[in-house]
Length: 383
Image 1 (cartoon, helix red, strand yellow):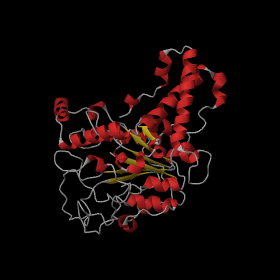
Image 2: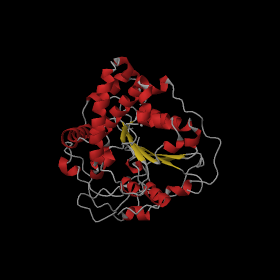
Image 3: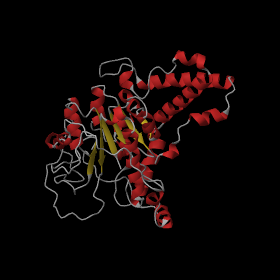
Image 4: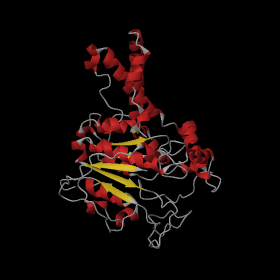
């Protein structure tokens, strides 16, 4: 859904079922939709919970891209801000592991995934200007084992990489939900596939096409968008405590305690990222800088105008340049910010900051618990 091709890969890394090398799994170097957005200086972010699976794509682990990854609570903070500051495209990854898993994948409680969708909907809907310029797309990557009487149609492979699979047939039908005041409340009968979103984004922003025959042939989801805004959308989605509580909690706990082949593969992916690549350091540094900045502003109003954090690590396309090629090397930029952080940290302690101040400045990540979601802005007005 992010590249238009798996570049021939289908096996999970050493999950006990398949025999796939772990290091090779992280060498998927195909161009992604994020690369195309960078070329047009279109602001994007990825919000994640525990493990951003999109980091298996090599380009996403580059410093300038990894710095755009934020924990999920950042989405809700951004949604409360100004509409023009919200990312033009954002991608949301759910919690894939443990008892808090909300990815709709067995053995996780499916109501946690529904709450994630409701939380994101409510965050967008509460900001009127943002809501009226946003298309929320909820997609599922597989059919969950449910029977489908419709035989998947044959389709040519996206490219020449077919070593692990022929890629000559589409998969089972899966749900896709478009949520926006610019979309009617109905069922769309047009055949879409997972590259239909890429086709829409490519057409919308006139991006350079991705090297995938599937994207080229796909029907765009844009045909579902109308030119007249609706006024009858739900103001709020509320889920009761009874709906969110499993009827037999102990069964869910027992299921989570059992390590499946799928869980094993995800843990190996996580361990590889921590031990070999460590792109997680970039968003963690960004978050730390933001907390320190907030603490300093609260304690020392006189220094608010210094603007030590004038450039935004999360928005390399806005580092004082209008063209698509970002002039500032992000790696060196992060190191400079690290030096600023050390100086600021020293100033904080010279002021004898109380530890409780930092507790007030942190976002409450436990207040929000999402299936993969994507948001695209400016959907109305001829888009």
